[in-house]
Image (cartoon, rainbow, N blue to C red; front, side, top):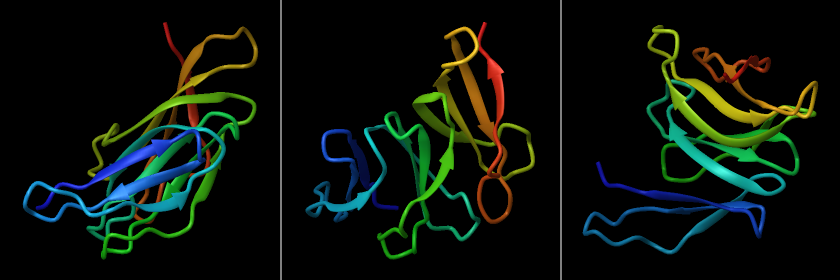
Length: 139
């Protein structure tokens, strides 16, 4: 497998994807719309098609953008998972419940009720993450 690179660009509200050439260099970036002020990006296969997908935490638009990979190094338009009124700070992917399907976790700043941090969990399904997070306050 040839390593690729994805970079959240908060100044231009997009994600840059640089595909690896296989010789340690990268091809010039393709850019995909991500939302308002993306601050974090994670990659993994969210829908079970063996193509890497991207998830971005968008601070200003208070959502997570999911871009499904097409298998040829390109990505679909973003689907949004709303976190209103909370503010996402970072995002990670992993199998959190042991079902062999990637789940999505986002560290969020809770605007309500007492301005503290929490983790929003979107459990994965065979086609994509669920639309409704479970939010757990951090200690």
